[in-house]
Length: 409
Image (cartoon, rainbow, N blue to C red):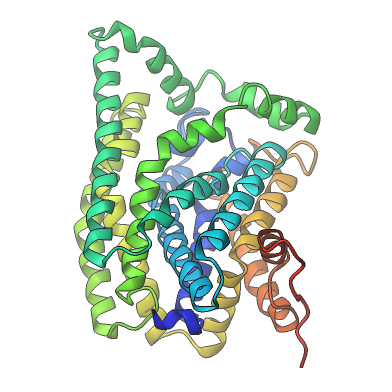
């Protein structure tokens, strides 16, 4: 049985803390601007210089990588929970599937009631499959992960090829898809102003939109994102088995992984960013660069981020800093949901109404504020309680009884 069944690795929690903060850097644009701006800085018109520079930084270093890091850690944590359940004499299957079913319900509530960018439902659906891979060797897990990545690349490369053909008039059956891509990822998106008005309106209108126009979005998201996400989660399981994510490798090995990963990925990702700028952020170009061609480089840089974080934690972080990051990671579920609640309250019409009015570069100020809040409140909370609020609720529901919450000294 893995040694992790009997202990908690601070490094695993700390890297999860970085991941939950990093995913906000990805999501902040989708909280504050129409979805078409998520991948395209020209969706609402020509971007300012600072916003364009921020987009380049995000495209090269943040977009997809932070979600990838979060997915790696979900896979590792899922395997850890399964092994701990077995070590404690509980049914691993019952423990795992109860957690995933409740996570799916949390995800649906998050999507329909709070924010459309939910990943919890996707993670829960992938989690239902992960149990089937729990006993595989490291090598087998990596082979399966490679298979899922190849399927994902084939799916998006094929779709992009069809869009290129449609744009040249050679694929009339792809015209509807081309129109949709222009609405969702194009420069000067025709739906931009409509989305701004919707998100500055009443909560009842947003709720009605999500439960009508977006009713099947969670399921569609699974069909589109399952392949890459499964690959990442299986990779996380393999890296957990290999003791990489638990901080047990030599420091030099983490440094080497980080240097090599960033060295081989920064130039092609920068080239893809330049290609999009040169094409005037044409929707088909943006889709090709973002959804298809960047995939292998995103995956390698995700591993580089994991290695870099573990390297820095080992060589530069103080005990206090590691403890703060680890606490934020142990409360990742709460911090993720609280981020959605706080950010939608700031930007949506039923809150401060800043949606569509803050530039891409300035949005990092909101990230910094939320990161500070996570680091400041997570450790004092866990000094008094065993779990974060939503972690406690999730665990209590999955085990069908209230779990002890307050620490006793």
